[in-house]
Image 1 (cartoon, one colour):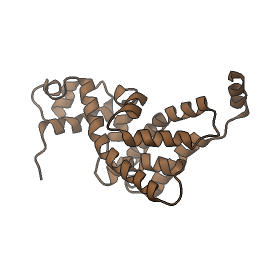
Image 2 (image 1 turned 30 degrees about the horizontal axis):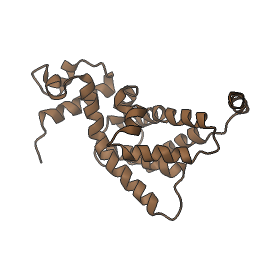
Image 3 (image 1 turned 60 degrees about the vertical axis):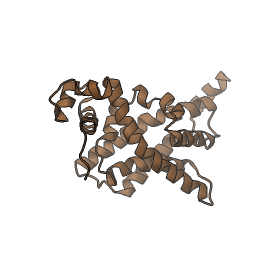
Image 4 (image 1 turned 135 degrees about the vertical axis):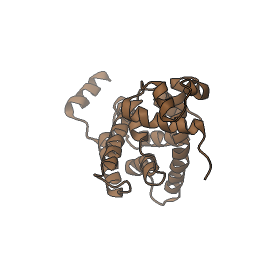
Length: 215
């Protein structure tokens, strides 16, 4: 087994401590948890707190991107056209697999803590050169919700990451507490159903009337 580098130890420590304590956890605590005697080790490897957070996200996104592209390719090869559920599965299942296949148990809670950080904003996800799969999935979800007025559709899609991060973090906590198995695909499917419900919920008469007045 390859030796874990100091940089990798810092990334792992940052992911865990930020998940547990928030993104303002002292950098010296991250360095100490990574076994680094020098308190400036984080700055040496990543330049700043933002650089560290971005590095954690990019490390995990590299794994997620490969798997999401695989799932999108499977959808493209299938006879049936992809719908909201199928697209959400392509987005979410790789997140569950971080735990079930790769033993990563803090990333969802890390995302919950940094959800407003530039590393995970719409700008990063929809225009980042290494996030093609997210861009494709979001554009196709937009396409598959034609019954919603465009402004409402945009608001629901923008709310999706916040709901997703929260639900995934709750699932991660349940796994850690032993309340659900890390590979319980029924729990995965239930979460996808909830997200689909968020996107496809009927528009109330009040909201429809408000949309009509705006147009």
